[in-house]
Image (tube, rainbow, N blue to C red; front, side, top):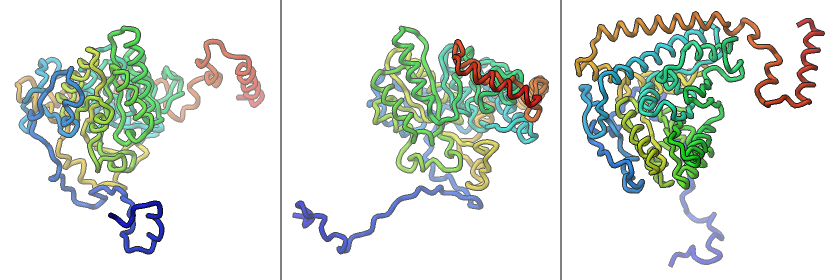
Length: 431
């Protein structure tokens, strides 16, 4: 019997020859200046992952939370049971939407550097996550995005001039300058208002999905967050409610390897996959090649069909990479190797779909170059149109009294008093 047994087992242990406890602090493999080697990544062959029935019990597909669903192989062929078999029209629509998203990002990033707006966030390298999902969902399904899913709006045909007006917070901004640039809101496009507070959209999406089911509606919800945000309490509350009530919701985790400046290990990536979060909650979990737009589309369609048949929620981890900084306020060169983005083993999502379309004979390099030129000009013209409504530094674009509006259906007396006091003070100051 161990001499530690009994009520006094802890007495005197400080003097014994025991190993000291050590705290583990996650550390990324590569830091600035380091050579990068991704050879230890376990990347299964395209087409190797089985496709179960949408009504399968979550426990029966536990292993899928640790694998990787892939459709496009190294030669650009679509293979295996997850191949969605999309028509040429849809493939080219996907390609164009991803290219437009990248062109939009490039123009708005440049606008921020020119001082025309205060802030911007690019989705370079992650376009497949938004575009593949948007085209797999119904147009009236409600999306609860994080701040790097601008591709959903673009895929749904939302006017990019309207998006630019919001970024510039100008007089054409429907949100009247009340949101940080890039935090769009478009109810007509099924795009819920973005919040800067991490993962608040998760319980909102689950609640919306529960309400849709309670009303006997046919619409489902989908939501997105970064891998770092899975450490937030809102994420876990949402998973509990989604599991208990079998909410018709798709919960996407965009694992792009890096939060603002900390790598995915701080959210638990060293211990397991993010799709494995689903296992403990009894939710169906899938792990997908996030740079393969066909895999993203197929997984989202599977999850959507599952939700619509009342089989419950699905959690999807999109394994991808954030090519550039977290935002225009971030310098990734300060915390990660410059080689990472160019050596990422899953490639570029646009280049991979282009290769596939060329292989099918429905596309070629000349048409792709012509499309890129056309889209750059389209985005340039849209930016010029939006800038007519004003940019940062041009003064106030909305009346000061608008800060009191659009909160209450009828403004309460105390706010009317405050509004009048503000207007009187402005008038007295000659403003």
